[in-house]
Length: 246
Image 1 (cartoon, rainbow, N blue to C red):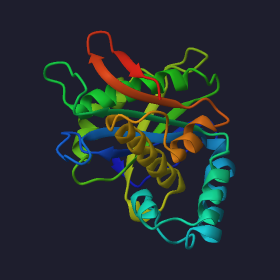
Image 2: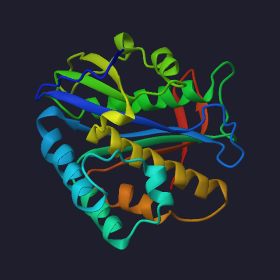
Image 3: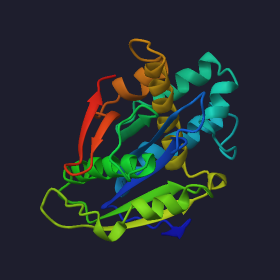
Image 4: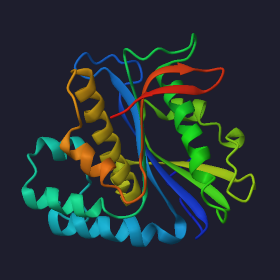
């Protein structure tokens, strides 16, 4: 993978991915790990994500040139105006997805949390790519992380992901890392989606019913069916996943 290089065409399926938690479940207050993100065709990125997100930041989140961090935003005690603005943005018709695990998740021998989450995420991407007959290639954009970049390169084998579009064509997959400071709208939205998925998983770990409010807005109110995969058990030989329903 390369750093901060993104040159999609109108028929590129753009997938922005961020992580939440620690892959070794080492934080006793947050023993979770997962990935979340958003996806859109290159021809729609500016209209559905880039322009409305930058407008939201400019008008309600402190400025278009201020990096957005979902954790910091939550801790800042957002105003009703800010929350309303984000909820309105989330009505945009783009794909959103998340795969979550925690310290209770049963993993195959020799497979760590990052590998398991990556396998399930790639499996979802296969389903996603198959919905587009005209997709010509796929661009995976990960938030750069000194700790996690090598794990991404280990587990997301771009040359062997076997992503086939709805017309049966095997697509080329490219990937890149982008720093948070780059303020790429798709990655900031992926951060929001991943953070929300982590909150929902912690809500479940605590034995609470239902869903946290921001999870409802992010996933249940999506105009395109979202994917929230809350994993209890991973069977590596079949890539079968037993999921909890949120």
